[in-house]
Image (cartoon, rainbow, N blue to C red; front, side, top):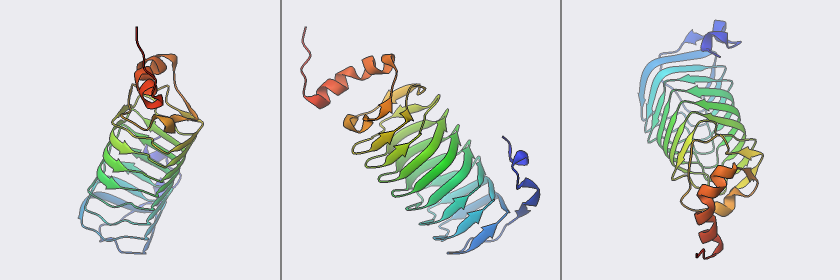
Length: 212
């Protein structure tokens, strides 16, 4: 669904100004902005859109994003610790070197994005879809994933150690590169082909020797 089809699209107004800590932003459209070292922790974004926006070394701790739309945005070396995301779509974006441990993601779609070196330890994800994404060095350690899926996504160096999974579907992933933490996959659904590919790693995690 494009931005124009969002129920709040006709209400959006351009917002070129700086972002501030603990501020509330309603129906604001942030477009073609380069926001470096912005301090907006605790801010609330309600029915807002972000288009071609770059956040570099941004501080967005405990920021809340409710019914927001993100397209072709970049978040680099930024802090999203304990942030909250609900009813949000992110597409065609980049998250690199992002700290988002303890974040809460609910009813969220992440589409055609690249996530590299993203810390989601202890996060809560419910009804989240990573569609056609590249996840590299993403840490879900100790996180709680419920109703999460990865259709068409490539997972490389992704960790689930200590995670709690329920209704988490990995069958659609194009690649499952999991270096460790395989016990954290308890509760996930994988395909028979994926099981065969992961069998040596499962055996190693269980201390089982496989010999012919």
